[in-house]
Image 1 (spheres, rainbow, N blue to C red):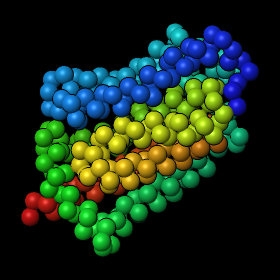
Image 2: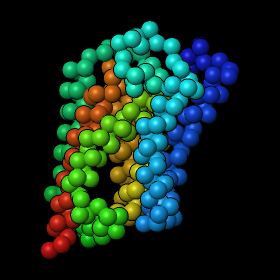
Image 3: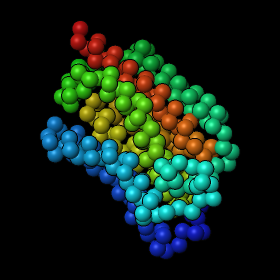
Image 4: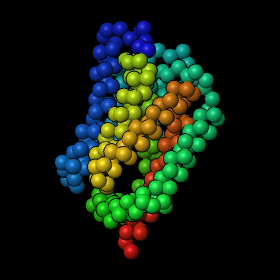
Length: 255
């Protein structure tokens, strides 16, 4: 539930920093992938939003909403920028095991979609379109370097932002269940734009629902264990599977 300490104007400040955090990635994704694809403005905006994911929580945590934490002395400065999420049972090893298991389950499901008809036929039919779009955005030549960045660093950045920052602030503003749902939907929203670039709208919405369910799982992990580690490991494994499957579809479409 809403924290008793979140009285006016603290709640206004929280909403003021959380709402743009939830909506700006969607707006910038639209500019980059739909409105001005390949343009200098689009590329600059998209590069800027990636910096925003790191910089905005730091600005908010250091200068706009400074959280009171009893455990701050045991935390690094980056984690201190995030709202505190009371863990019901902090356990780093357990959260990594659960996160890895979930990530592997997602990877297994993705592989099944790739090898079992008729889903496999549908997936392979998008191979030429995926190859063309990746090439249009300049990612084909540096696919594996870009993939490594997405899997390791970008997944960590998204967990820091969507679970640590967005969910962390939402749980001070709305009931916890609503914070989970709103954070997951905001996380999935810009994926609708991105996935629509590579697939038909119907497929993009189905995959985006999967992204939302992943976001729900990762925020539950974060709340349960008070660390982003398990969510990051899970996210990383899922992204590795996506990058690998993307490469398979790209290379098979070339034959």
